[in-house]
Image 1 (cartoon, helix red, strand yellow):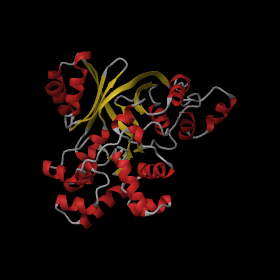
Image 2 (tube, rainbow, N blue to C red):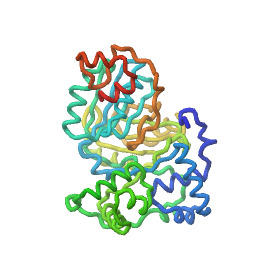
Image 3 (cartoon, helix red, strand yellow):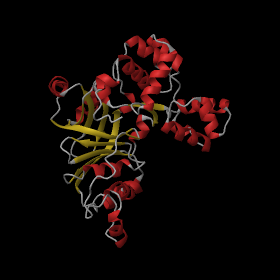
Length: 364
């Protein structure tokens, strides 16, 4: 189903949205537990979740801990030539170290989050993007501190009692240095990064380990903060028609105060202190443009922000590592346009006849 043309009111009804919210709280919550808290039958929960997942409307995946994910993360704003945005956005989305990619309103900017190591970062920023004819400018913000991220956001269709009932019990958090991952741990995490709702039995069969061992390992990984989940769904299907990034200038002495206040707001799904032209970035969902205006004037205004730049997301391409949409496979791209990382060698000229998606993936 194409989420860009789907009518949210006819795709996700009230119960569907409540089920999504339940998975935002705990992506591995058992069907029976969700049914009990929401007051519906387990069969209804199973049927509804299966329908949304099979239609491609909902996917639950594992996310790194918010503090771990922020270490070395980069927020990229890539300006491109008009008409080339899909090529660059898809090239970035094809990278495993880029979990979030958005096309911004206006069609000349791509926003992305990169979690790669220094080598991958340097190749992308200093070689691949500058060598791409379609890219006109790249602004890079290093994440200095994460106040909140997408894995913590909840759409608000549940009451306080329901949220409390679905919230997993707190477990003693292990020190990061105390958690050494072996081959089995990494195999389990890799499976959960694709589908975090796999049962213990399914995981055991997939990794070739006893189910009791898998249960113990998952409990250990949860204690280390490595089993956070993200219910990936188009926010429009939850009644949020506007997705915006706010690039803010905040007095350094008030940065922590403003970041903490924004992270607590129910519409905000990510707040990061950053390097670069702005020192704070906040991502938020609003029901419409009027809601965005009210947030800017009523919520942001009183916080004493010196300057705010508002960039509206036109289309989400990838969220939490999950591709959401792809451009048409035969979308036109002139031969002289190269994807990030493409060289000026004879081999790259030979690839000019390849489909745009293939060349983009091989570059970025």
